[in-house]
Image (cartoon, rainbow, N blue to C red; front, side, top):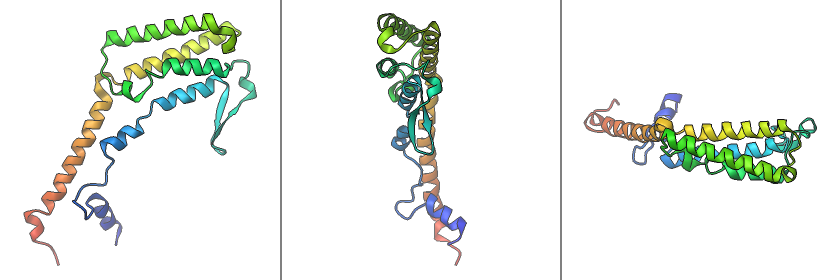
Length: 181
């Protein structure tokens, strides 16, 4: 079987003639904004990812700016609802986005004031650093679904799947009766 025939087989397998594309559910599984929350938590604790060993390790150079696990976990818990798959598929208006963003920032500031010691905060620089990270992550997550970008992507995949499926069935229709031998 040559390369072109293999591609044809992948596009139009024997069972039903449906293309070998990811389904909507498969695509939804690949949208994982909550992974960002896990990464933020590790980075707040002064950890970096080691690709070779496939694990997080504490970088000694970042210890002075690192938060405790309690602090990093608290921040991850605070931002998780906005950095989730549900949020990335929502369609919030501008007013709701800014109100939610402001509410999260106020909650963060109150928590820093109440828990600075257990969170491992010792300098004003850490407060600004943490605040900047949270502001960015939350704003980007809340603005991500603006204009229904991810929804349109999902709908276009579904539409493309249907178009390719129909195309394959049309090829086998009337014209499929006359094959080269």
